[in-house]
Figure (tube, rainbow, N blue to C red):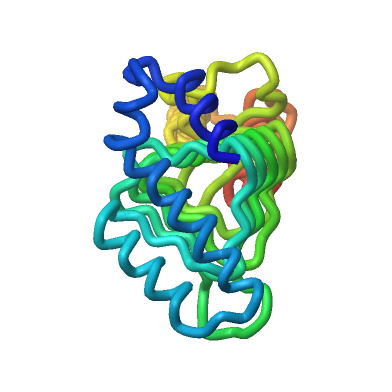
Length: 241
């Protein structure tokens, strides 16, 4: 797993220049090495020592991973300061996690209470994924998002709360955060256009003395109005998540 983790860093980070630099200067890799040891001790039932190793790792790297968490191979924690991964969290193979990410719970419930990430997931800086939820394979979570519901595979999620903004991520660059849709801005634009349309129709009503029935029929038959209705309803309903 260490060799796979090292290879993944060289593939994903253009700043990685040599093995020595990666081994001694990448806190994400160091935190994973500490975690592999603490997780093995945790599984065989050793008390105290796994948590103490986790505590030392947090002090040295700024990354807190509970010994009970399951971390797959090829996971890359880039920069990593402030990353928190809870006890029952599961991180799939080749996931990419940026600084400030929390894979946490939503309360004091027992049992599985942290998220499960599929393979090749990208979690942007400062994102919070909370609760016993399932994040599918090849999902991209935008920086600063708060995800509280299951997310299907091959999608992009942004916002608070997180909403699906793109389907099929297979051909997208995982680092193209600037190309993620701004759902909130689109809904505000739709509402703004609706207000302008209503103002224009009321002006026409005043000028031509249209009846209320005719005005209502005109609003109902307007295809732009129907499209914006659907967009606003999707936004309020979580846009499919």
